Image (cartoon, rainbow, N blue to C red; front, side, top):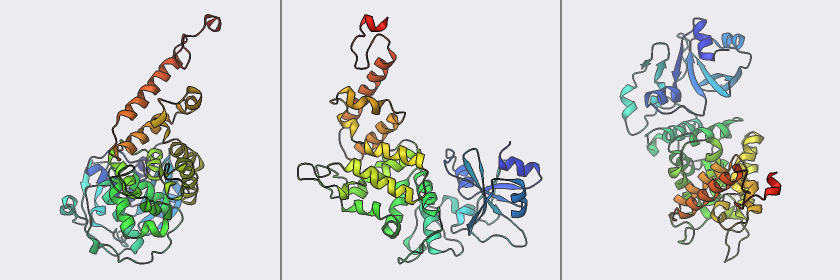
Length: 365
């Protein structure tokens, strides 16, 4: 079956990329892991008749969602007699026509695309305006004036799925630290994600995180991330979430914080509605994120099972970003990579045991 865009165009409907999908195309960014945002002249009734997997979004700027091959297609229906309300920021009104391979600017916002700051447009609920700003500054070059955001104060509890989708959208950006910092400064993290806010209590001392407190360190790791895979990104965000509750000593101030962090992360992600399979992968990375530092000294019987995991390359990436954000030498990362490469080489060699020793002839026969 063809994708939903092709299905609608074959039925004679107009379909345009809008919002983030149009902006990604305009700025020539790699394809997002997130939804594809579309504007169509098809009615909601027609969409329901055409797609069995359709669900109703219930958001101000979204009408329906169609799932196809592990991707969501978020539709906004356009009626010339009753046009949809404007999105919170002007740049989100850009359109892209995939049939003609051209950009469209029906709202005259083209000059705003290259501005350094976002331009508010229309009126949006405070929480929606803040969430859209966080996504935009994470994915593009924009900043935002504080005066353009709603005043600080209580934020209404959003609809189900809002937190999961917002977090994934921010982490999918090339600069997620900008969006996360904005959410923190506007009180969103304190109100809704207190597990993350507690990391700001982790002191910044020269022996641990001279670059800043635990929250600042977490934001710094994203500057060293390669790619935006959601599992790795969530593990980076949550890898130190256990430190504030760690029952450490003066000699070992954050003892068992990885194990404790895996438990806290599991509860946090479950509360936000993430699937169980993804939670298992994220918590694996958090639980073992300190292992690469000791890999050279560990006996094989303690590290073999972990290195056999298909997630181990991502574990090394997590360690590299964590190390790079802390101003430590990268030597231990390269040593861990060498241990892993040697292990894989020995594992594939029928004449060697996994620890590198020669295989006895009686075992070969």
